[in-house]
Image (cartoon, rainbow, N blue to C red; front, side, top):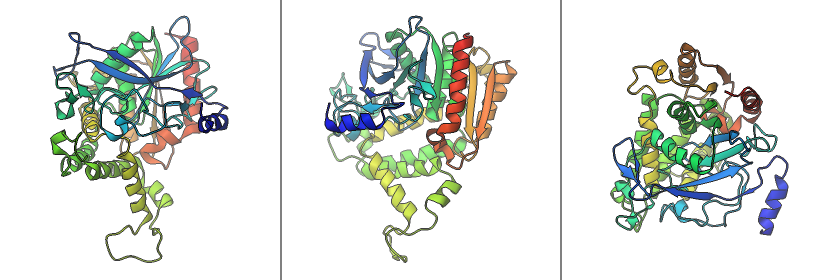
Length: 410
């Protein structure tokens, strides 16, 4: 272990999930490819995942944690994967990269997962996987298509949240999990949690959808479409076939900047930036960076392009747009009728991307079916990002909810 990692481990030793390494599971080899909602088939499929804690003898203490749009499998602890920029980071190569997928850094939900934390790894076997369609170790458009020996690009089949969950079920079976104590996630992760409860009602004991919806609103779809158009309008997009060429960096950066605005709130942007100028005392009267908020958004775009593939952005946002639990059911209450999980639904007061009324719709439909559900709307100025930042309030609720679920059982 390098001295840098050793120092990092010492810094977060208390309550940390420790040193973790991304693992890989491959399935759906020919001729047993996985059938998708679109009717197309995909295989072989590799899923990148991390696990924390131990599966108990009854194999029923598993907590599945799902990431949002730009997340990955590295949810907690310190990554032990080699340092460096991987093929998955640049969008070149594939799921690839059995090499350096993550940097030496804390997981994206490390404040919630670990010994003694909300999702206690001393009690639960916690699993987080990168979604199919992604570019952080799981099979996606930047992966090599075995039929052509080239990256899929736009020939990658369109996937849905239900397809993501279908692939995750294969991983769960591979890990020997018998029952899911809880399915937990925010944003896109919350959609996956809901889909698990609907698709596998006899397997999931509880569900914690956070800052999410049973179907994306027209406003959400609109923001996703503008982001996709920014990518596709980039001169270097080449109809998705850019892996051996210049990549659509400006388009992807703009897509990220737009999306990041929706993750914040008017109040949080006012407190964080206001109208403060960046490294100057008066306006430049040109198109350089005048304001702090401009600099911040440009930084977000520049950071994102180093770790995410533009085509994955297209495919994952489209999966979010297609997500609709009411499809084919005539209503949300009907769609949730067969669900057997108990629920903890969490929303945030300033979230305007997934506003609280959308969480309340889920609660109302669950109550219509007599399903055990608790709801909490947490006051917060952070906007949609609150599910990553409001640690104390979520810890209190989630820890108690999981403890109650584990004690009571089905």
